[in-house]
Amino acid sequence: GPHGWGARVKIISGTYTGDGTSGRYITGVGWQPDFVYVKSNAAGGLGWYKFSSMQGRQAAIRNTDGAQDTNQIENLMPDGFIVSSDMNTNLIVYYYLAIRADPRDCKVFTYIGDGNDARAFTGVGFQPGFVLIAHDEPGTAIKSKMKFATQAGDTATELPATADTSNWIQSL
Image 1 (cartoon, helix red, strand yellow):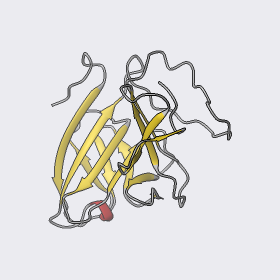
Image 2 (tube, one colour):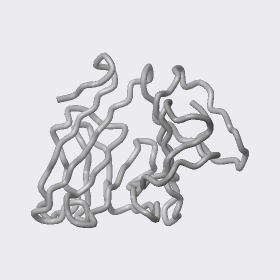
Image 3 (tube, rainbow, N blue to C red):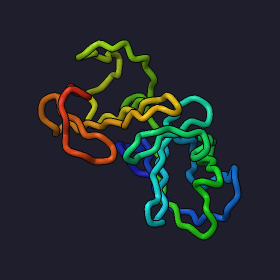
Image 4 (cartoon, rainbow, N blue to C red):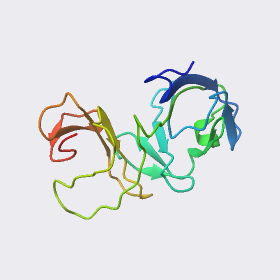
């Protein structure tokens, strides 16, 4: 069931078996997620994630090209999320992670890039222990970046996991 910090941030994982339909509503989460990650158990299956701040049907892929698509995780709903037939292949098992943010512990927001280095984001309200950034422009090959508070200096990790590199997420 849901668990997290206090009961404020909710985190749940689950599975579903694909039935081949498009627009399938995966229910049973219990609340509307702010973040969903879905991955199949099929060989070569790609993982997709969607933030509540992503426009329309956009979702980001967690693979080598970092591309986005509009035909994977279609929408976040009051009791789960909707997937397309691409994330609902008949008889394939899919695993998901859903997170509901609480502004005291977890934030989901959008920002417009300005090309400046060492850009600070204020007003979060707490010291993050983890940050995940996804580029939100369909058709671009920008990979997502993540940083744990335990990573030293200005290093961060690219998804898929590659060697840590500096100058992405510089500090928390």
